[in-house]
Picture 1 (spheres, rainbow, N blue to C red):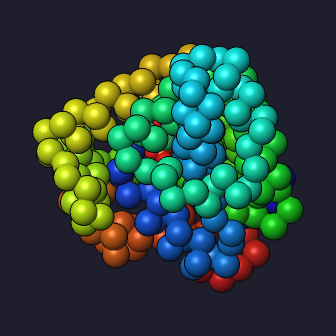
Picture 2 (picture 1 turned 90 degrees about the vertical axis):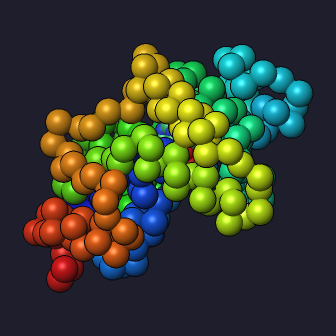
Length: 213
Ligand code: DC
């Protein structure tokens, strides 16, 4: 494994994606949003008219996944969120996506964000963050994203959906969302994107060999 892996895990809308993208640019590493893999699998299952909770249909969709699927414009929103969470709890889906994630970072290093990067995909990563925020704040952020896109949304409903999805992601048997024992915690409830980035650099200082920080 490349020693230059940054693993970023945590619940929905905690600020992982924004932070991971900035860290990737800072360290000169490629970035993979692994949630997109599960979203794209969920979409394929929906396209096939099947149930995302059906292990056979979901595993077939995961094995058929192509890079172009990650470019689709319909991978966000409540239906895609729910389908992604459902397929993500199926062990055969996770197994089918494992090599892609490991290969992505193996040779040159990478920043990856998800739920199990520090626990399952790259347990030996030298740099691990677990990014969280209160459920109220994460609901508000997800709601604001939808409103900014012109999607009508109700704050209480969106917050409840975030809470339910986290509960499913944390309770599932297959690679449940949890901090790795050696992850550093970063709570972004009261931090904006700049402050979260600054704090992340402090937490990761000295952990990535091979390049000045
Ligand atoms: O990070 P996100 O909201 O795009 O993730 C979509 C779903 O996929 C979410 O329910 C958690 C799941 N997921 C996962 O189980 N493991 C990952 N590494 C990334 C996402």
